[in-house]
Image (cartoon, rainbow, N blue to C red; front, side, top):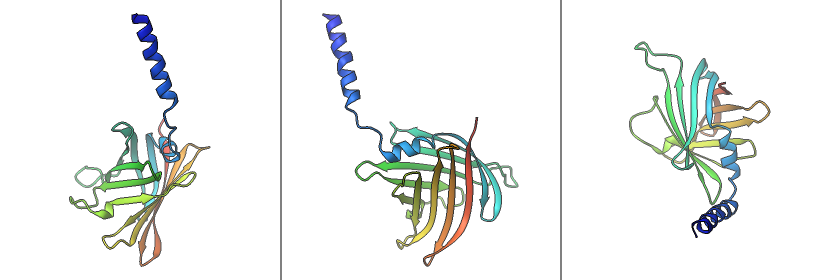
Length: 173
């Protein structure tokens, strides 16, 4: 009797797994961002290098990115730090991004929340100011052949885009 029950339990588990929904295109794209990276390029006109780690947390509900610059302040602390949470809206496959960093205040605001409608290999995040106008854009672009990412950042004022940064993420080995 126990063998029959065990077999039924195993068959039930296999059947449930086979009917599970496949990962969304956004999830599949963001899966490539999970891991450890070295970010290098230019931000605000200055060369920079950061260490990045990204991992799925809370039952694969959020991709958490930790970003720490290698450049230090006069007191020896990182010149820049960020914690980024990315989530996917299942119904629309749109992506939300909460970007908390050491340049902001200690108060949460809507300007820290970006949204994107992912494309085949890019996630063009748009951040809005308190008035609902686009204030910042950060497009994550994935290069599958090189297994690398590019983040192209722009400030937007009165509809005019001005490059803020262009960085590349190379996977740490």
